[in-house]
Image 1 (cartoon, rainbow, N blue to C red):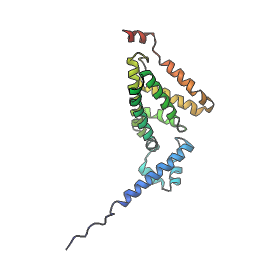
Image 2 (image 1 turned 90 degrees about the vertical axis):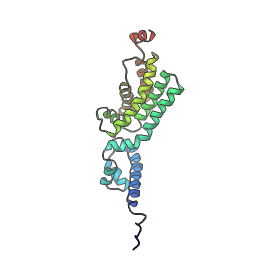
Image 3 (image 1 turned 60 degrees about the vertical axis):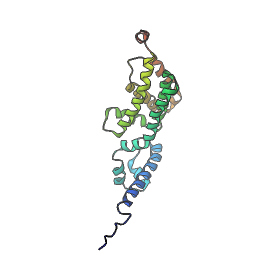
Image 4 (image 1 turned 180 degrees about the vertical axis):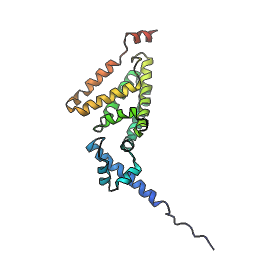
Length: 204
């Protein structure tokens, strides 16, 4: 007796539906987070996406997992940008341009800077690995500037990550100070300049 072939769609429709649900959740989440900020209601996301809350949690078990999916491409572009700047610009300028772009990106959503800072103490967060990639990219630019004696030697990438997010947080929490962000950023860069001991060490 000939064996009947399995239906060609067997096992495939659910995966296609799952992909569609995930894409729809991400599309709606981008809108809701833009409106409500990084602490946006996941219940609102599910409702507006037309899926159950359980479906949302199957794809994104935590808020950080959803944020990481929304921000992944932005993070990848920032890491690539660091490598491009390292080739195209002198070390000090490359670091300054990258930090400025990162500061602006950290203010993309209300409350995002606070969420990114929280990842420093939460290695289990999906955002932690993405932020680590960016800190490593920043660290490469920082090391190049330090080797040239352009940045004080007691600064590390975590310091810069915290400072950039702090500037974004100030603009987030006090919109009246948002117009001062570039001035404050300049003050941060001034604070990175080598001190007397650093300059002497670089000259030896």
